[in-house]
Image (cartoon, rainbow, N blue to C red; front, side, top):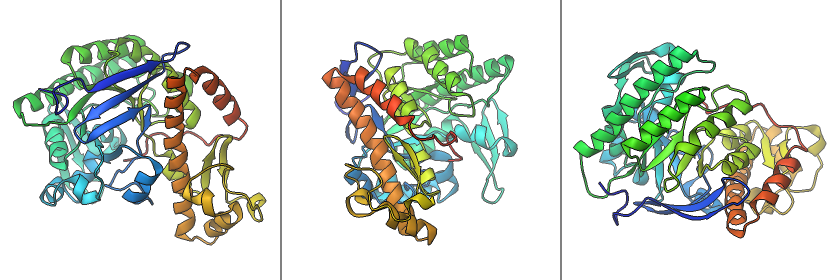
Amino acid sequence: MSSTPEGGTAFELHATDPCSRARAGTLLTRRGPVTTPVFMPVGTQGTVKAASPDELKALGAQVILGNTYHLHVRPGEGVIARLGGLHRFAAWDRPILTDSGGFQVFSLAKLRKITPEGVHFQNHLDGTPTFIGPDRSMEIQRDLGSDIVMAFDECPPHPCPRDEAARSLELTLSWEARSLAWWEQNPGDNRPLVFGIVQGSSYADLRERSARALVQMGFDGYAIGGVSVGEPEEEMMAAVEASEPFLPADKPRYAMGLGTPPQMIEMVARGVDMFDCVLPTRLARNGTAFTAAGTMALKNAEYAEDPRPIEEGCGCPACAQFTRAYIRHLIKAEEILGLRLITLHNLHFYVGLLNRARKEILAGSFAGFRKTFVAGYAKRPEPVQTGRDFR
């Protein structure tokens, strides 16, 4: 099976940083190239909350996410397929990556039963029984029309005893092999890219085993899963460090569901190419904006008469036209525009940060940028890391 319509490699590496493992590349998808490092806004329900497709394009978003489980539950992949697929349904003509539904094995722990065949759920909307396993997940993602398909996996909780993490990993590896086999058994022209997911909880040897096994299976790309599930930041970084050395340099690496801006830059320095996170949109709905100096709680009284934009020099729609004082007024008055403006600013910041990292890698100046950005970001208090969210 070919990874791209042309039958070539799915990833081209252009530059590496001499002082770290940071790299700049291009991911080749059936809907066009994606330059990396890249931030991918989360569109769980077929929409990135509070942002239109045209606004996302104007911000520079190259890829958005959809969630297999949530779209399966509502409105159903059959409805979406009959209406032309998720791209037409959501009016998004650029690449889409879909989560496999495996994260709901973690987030719906009270509503599920795991078997070797897959996971039996009680629908979180109305309790209706449903089932997602490797084959079903691949079928749903095919019907959605995803360009980057994630293999079905189990995401263990934190903390996780070693014997449970090992059991979970063996189940995940069997599911991921079946996920890849499904595409071999259901060939078609111009198939999507299929990514495996490294698991293993906080155990370095299990992470290594997972990575090596997935590489033997031959996926188009590799995600590092089981991070940002409540573990301390040092364990998050250690999970990446235990996985990345065993992943091939000519394939993309994706850290799932994270993180804060300095975490992403540190992950780039550890060789990660792709990121997604709900923080820019979720915190925007709480009135919190991201800036190069840290987060800014615009509800605070100190901004009541502040005539400056959220961030000086920012070219987003919010900063180009509106003051902190006005946006604070909108938030206090519970006007939807306020949440939208902060959302657009935060997404512009996240997308732009990874674009900047790419430019610095290509220019050979990433090390200085990393040091300056991470130190400068600490000027303002950071919100509590809240993980991947129930997507």
